[in-house]
Length: 131
Image (cartoon, rainbow, N blue to C red):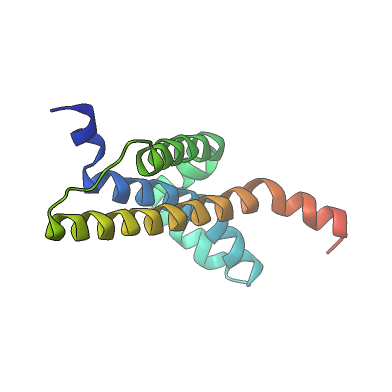
């Protein structure tokens, strides 16, 4: 199997969305719930889903791994010399899949930025503005 066929598998894009969602679960969602007064929910979820504690304890590695995968996905989506087939049906399918790939990428990047902001930037902003 050539390298191009390997990186064009659709499950790769969904895998990236899953990995970046991990940054949201470990970092942004607990902070949001505690801010809204649902600290008991966060404690209960962390007790019942021990993998979330691991992600939160290793948030730097989680965010770096997700960022690396996002960079690879960006290269896969926008790499040079991509061409769709000349067959009209396959060309339409190719363009639709390219559009969905970009949507999934931007959704994943947004999730990553929310996780990064809540993990590393939210507290310094809060302290600076004395909220």
